[in-house]
Length: 279
Image (cartoon, rainbow, N blue to C red):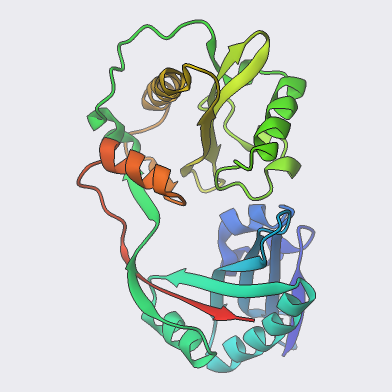
């Protein structure tokens, strides 16, 4: 058995194990992966992780996105190599979240903590958007637009501005992603004096899920701007996606938790297992 690196060039070879969404993510700047391959070239397991806080003054963290292995021996080999590559990436802490008790128990054996928690991911469907307490019939002003109408320069200038403010939503690699990584039609923005002063970015994954990624606005009427952008995007999604299309909202901050509690009262994340380990 050999442990090899998963890169954007070879990620497609491991799609049966890691799935099409992670295959796509392997082209992103802070995603890393390793795979266990037998003598016949068959993949027996894989570990994918995302580096967090690399471009900040905080210690680098690693979010383990996936651990799959045919057995504990394979997982142990992957974990052993993970310690090495995590050290190379100067990771100070690793953490995981999983619905699989077997995976959580393995991590616990490897020195991770383990506890029950509600997932930060809130999973709803496009049909659920019909229930949002929004005035979807409000006339959306001309300055609220689809991101498809924004130039690359306008987008890049806005990204620079929010990165200076330290607000990149859940998109760790926002500075490195092209605008077409997002669903430009479903995403919305606000334009003032030919500059973007608000944006709601939505990613459509290769598997067809919708993932809100960044939701922010500036200026004296930023609250109004936020509401109008949401109406714009919600109306587009309801008109252009089937009701059973999955939407995954990652509640990464207190502000997002508060917003989802207000708009999606009664919805909860799945019960999962989480843990972390100092590296």
